[in-house]
Length: 309
Image (tube, rainbow, N blue to C red; front, side, top):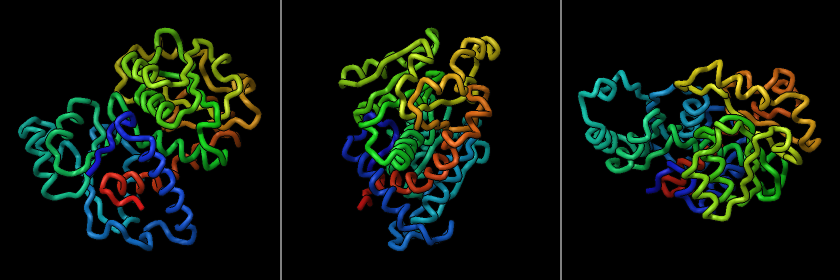
């Protein structure tokens, strides 16, 4: 049994295995329909339970389809449907009940303490579907997409993040260590990366550079990634924050400083951090990025259940 909570806690070898397995599974599904099971049916009769305390579209759908295509079933719980939201039952007790019913559990939460409590009390694998500090499944899927499009290892590419320092960036920074790729981070001075994660990255020989000028950050970039400036449940003065990021918008004038064949990724949903012109251009690969979530989630589940081929 293995958890999938933060990328820094998973070996580079295992992360590479997940991506390689996802490639094989995607190729073998070329002639299959959405709800057809993979021919090896590796997770027949297995149950995945997922719970979302924050809004979710891609993560919810992709994990649901992932377990179905692997031959298992999925059940989605809402916090207001059980005793979690009103605090009438300890999370530790809920974890023990879930462990007795399911084979794997996914939580998307706005409270990092809940991830820690579940990790300590679940007897089944835990997947982090997004937390304040991390979004590991998103970044592994993004790496899969980057290598699929560029047809080379990410370690041979220049990656640039433009925008807010959030949970997605945290996981991208951890990934830059695990996959040994160059990462430029372009953000305003007041929105620099998480200090503890940046410190861990530096300690582990990361290739990260921070720029407070977007144009300098994207120079020679093969890939530019971004996310919403105002995230879900972001308790900030929105207009003030948006103003701080006005020079970090991904638009036609900015991407001229990147490589000509640079691609743009956005984990969605989008805001005003990217122009419509760039978002709707051939450089932007968000739909391929989103659809790839399914095949990668499958391999993450298999990794957690010790079923990777």
